[in-house]
Length: 400
Image 1 (cartoon, rainbow, N blue to C red):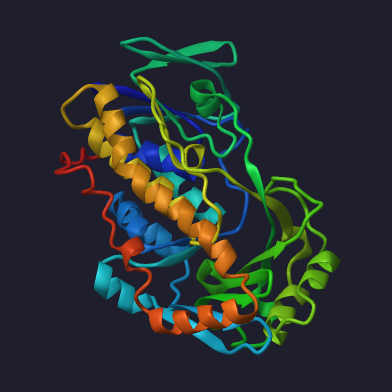
Image 2: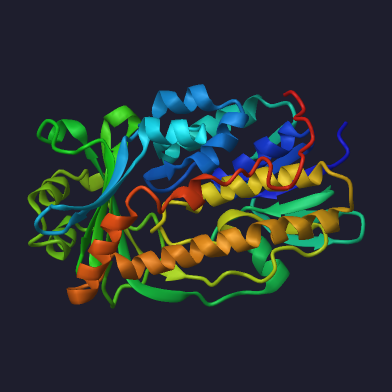
């Protein structure tokens, strides 16, 4: 029996990563997911070396490589002319420099890899259709109410996403601000496209008041498209809201032929749209024996491709700290102290990118010149971070 039992509210990417990192340190873990099945809404993710080092440390490299795509670079292009504004190397260059790969992966595929590993781990108990409805704690234990059952543990981790019940129980409700941006997400089967139309890169097309991102998924079988437009009058925050292809085509009318080809071949059954809301960095994540992780405490706009990575980093740092000497309360305080500055920088950087990507006129011209000079240098602060060592000399991992 381990020293502590950790309760996790939320069984998405953040919650499952936390379960695996904590169980890998020898804790007993119980995960409560409100949905009837474990899964992820959405399509593509970019997993940079700062988070693949954590996933590979969990022994997941082989299953990840079997479903992922390895891009050879990133590229910024002009919305109409298609000219390359700036680019960065990925692929072998990233592996050589940081020691870990850069993956493009479908959210459902990553979730399946994490779920398979968690299901096989003797220290993890998974529950679905199990919403955490109430939270309480004292000096020695924490208790959650799930249906008619009350479950106790030593620590509660709120990994229950952007509308976190745990966060609201600790700090009250919030009123996020609409950014004025609406995001489209869609998938294009590669067989629908002309051969070699799409390069093996994460490509972002910068345009006036909007941008368009695309990259390969599933070993190159699909192209993931994320299309963001400044517009008012529709403010539904939901990744499961269906989108209308005619509206998307109208939003990007006049853009480059490659963008048009992608839009024309999007799978209509996999086209969604959501209004993007912003939430400022929190000043506190923990109280007593309860803390938050991932989108529950630092939800991030999708303009640095680091949202999932931050949750995975959180999981590694939290697990390392809870194995070290000291009270639970002290280690949870250390956890937020170690993570707050970096996650706030990611939130703020993503917010800035929303403005930078959509510049017009002289500002866009100056941005493009700066992007050419910065090519190859701007990602180092993101990729170099080592969550496995961030908490100081971590304890030896406990074999599963």
